[in-house]
Length: 156
Image (tube, rainbow, N blue to C red; front, side):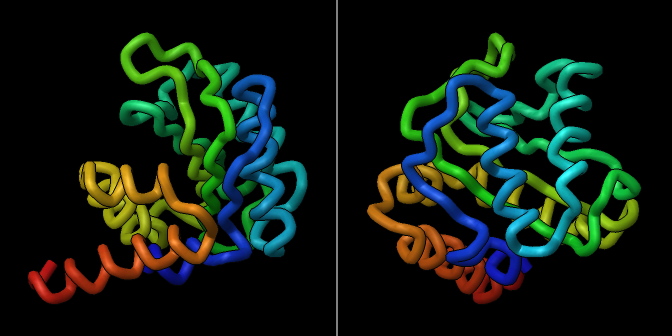
């Protein structure tokens, strides 16, 4: 599922962002361009962080911004931006962030498979390192696909 969501069109590397808001905007723009969310979803993701704090920073250097389905999600979606320079999100344990995975869900359940696969990816230090040093989007896609095929062989 992760490989179906993270594609050449939903991945961008070397992204410039002045702060966490701009990092979320850039990740959200990829979802808008893909036709997966309405533009207002970007503002909703930013509002969630303003209201609830940097809870979206889930691992060292990794943030997963998201908002409610009713804020303009059309289909389950995921994008990834790798920032050129990491930015602080306000999370003392895991700042600064260099990988931003914007997530959109249409309901409370349909995205859970993608979240589970993303969680596994984020605990794979080798895969994360490969994503961080990838020269292009195709390399990132290859890392994700290799990780997925490895999981299937393991029965997971």
